[in-house]
Length: 311
Image (cartoon, rainbow, N blue to C red; front, side, top):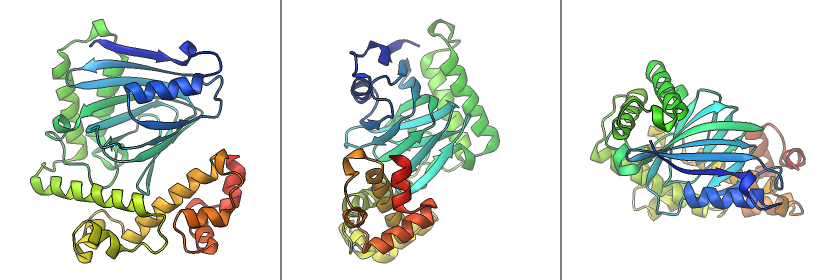
């Protein structure tokens, strides 16, 4: 296992640690927008190692709020195991909280975001999409996390990632490609016995297209399920069926995307002087009252209180 790169914010120019970290992550890991609390003296490091067709990234950082922007170029699956601290992952209105020993699978062809604890360490397995999908179903459905998987095999996968992440390059007992294949097999066992079929691949691609349509158009206050179905050239009935198969509804997911967009604005200093009514309109809510009602129902506090807490 060859170390390809080691990055630490101590190498950054004085006063530019946040900017340096963001640029290095984008250049060597994935396309991300990163916000931190201590921009000048932010502390973080990452080591990237080759592992046959895949890569292992060992990440340790202070608090981060991260938004991954799919650019259509990266076809990779990313399996992230938390080894210290916690992460709250959001994807298309879905949210999962990962503690130490938990992991989740993300598709870099889709947008997602996450927020970490004050200090967080992870082992990240980055896999080429075509290679990974030989072993697992196309992950176009609900967010896949360890808590929803087979208890025995999800624990075995976590142990395997820890073993690989904790090994020095000279201590690897087997060929890199063999180790990557074994991790992939453990992932397949943890996720389940589903087989990868053309139908599954088609549905996964269709759900990604539908989600992308909603992400692009969620600010339209009159956006309907019929609009999204027409844009993706499917019937309204089939659209609702796809959401039902993923244990959700169009309305629930649209509301979740709008609320996630509003939360980003409420926590962004650049929007500190923007009125709540304007944020409601910019994120597609019909009225400020509807915005407040949905926000409090999901988050437990009003938008005004949430903004005060974040700022």
